[in-house]
Length: 68
Image (tube, rainbow, N blue to C red; front, side, top):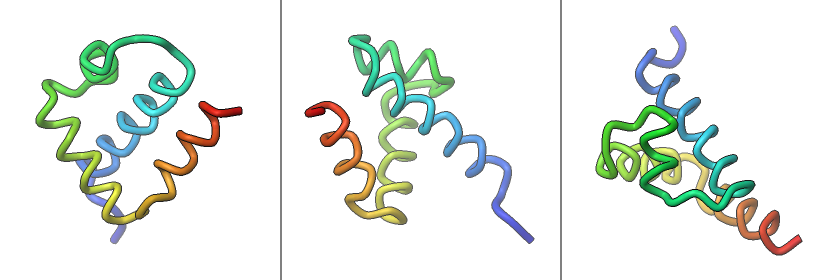
């Protein structure tokens, strides 16, 4: 079967947004729009869905990269 297309697309957009959050000083609103999310609600919904799957893994990775 596999993953539904919309969930796959959202995960790609979110991955790109994480890279922008880590490596740029852009605002979150700019990053959301630049990575294909129509608004803050869509970004937040996707983030929460992915976080439920991964737990704190992503948060720990973001914090460790910003500290180093």
